[in-house]
Image (cartoon, rainbow, N blue to C red; front, side):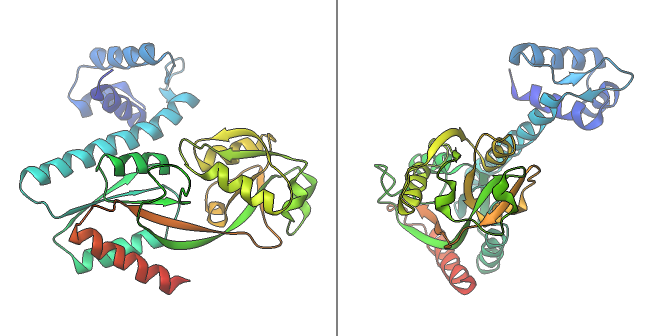
Length: 299
């Protein structure tokens, strides 16, 4: 499997026509058809439905399209970053973030930074917190908006950090659950339920946080299922596999089949940005100062 296979698939998915996609890619149509078939055979999944009069994507194809677009965008960002480096433009800042979270703060900090440092290249990378920690370790990013800070995992707990947001936690409940009719929920009332949690691999420290939050309410959560990202948590809850605790801003995501209910008493968690202690970049120092100033003004 090569990168070109992903580009070919995106073209077919966007055009919904092998003829138009081949013209767009400057390829012969039989060759493009063969390349898509090779891709499907290699991954063992049918992505394109060719049985009707029109070409359309299967459900697997629609999901694959979202991830493929993100992959190609990340590749393009990496190419631009290395091109800047080869031209001697060393003033750049690489930032990791979690998609669909902190919609207002991140653009505000980037706008303020661009205004203050117009000649510094900003490179953004959509990563899970776990990927951000690894990228920091490998010096691929300068700063990561990791959200929940891992306080116990060796190698993470001593990273410099700043709190940029305080988030109210809400209970995510299946729509059919009797608790969904309540205006708010005491955390202790969730004790009989199974919980859906975020994966420790993608969100280091999240399991410890969940257990500690429930311990404060005098029970230990029974975690039935883990999910890599917040949308998957919502889907699992909608399927009645359990309940979940997530930041309030998660309500901006599509959430068919679930309701969000505030907790009583209120449960607050801090979201943090982290960076390497040995990164002496002036650009990083300036950006961290902007993050601190803007987050302080919003509290």
